Image (cartoon, rainbow, N blue to C red; front, top):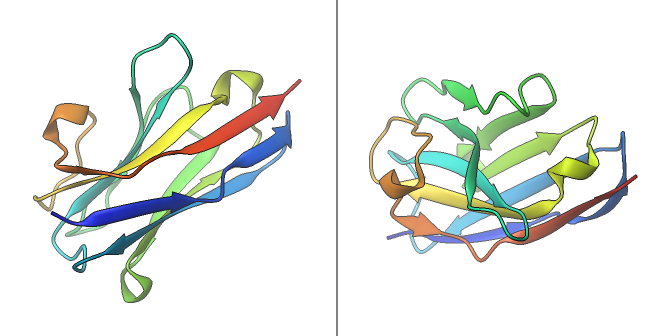
Length: 124
C-alpha cells in the first residue's frame, strides 16, 4: 500500500477557491488510479473526482463538474484537487485515495489506500 497525506484544507467564503494536495510516500503512485472523496457530517462518504494513471482520464461527480479539477504531478508524487466557485454544500472532510490499478473508479470500495482527510469549510 501507499501512504497518503492530504493538505490544503481550510475555511473559505462561498465563491472562493482552494487547492487540495495529496502526497504519496512509501512508494511512488505510478500505476495507481487516484481519487478524491468527501464526507459531510451525518452523510456517507461520496465520490468527488478520480484520475486514471495510464492516460490521465479524469472523472467528476455531477455536483462538482465544471468547478473542480483533479490533476497529478508524477515527478512530485502528488495529486491535486483544484476547487473553485465553492459553495457551502461543499463543506466536508476530503479524502484522497489510491487503488492498485491504472483505471479510475467512482466507488470507494475499489480503493486500497486512504489518507487521513482534510477539512474544507465554506461559509455563506
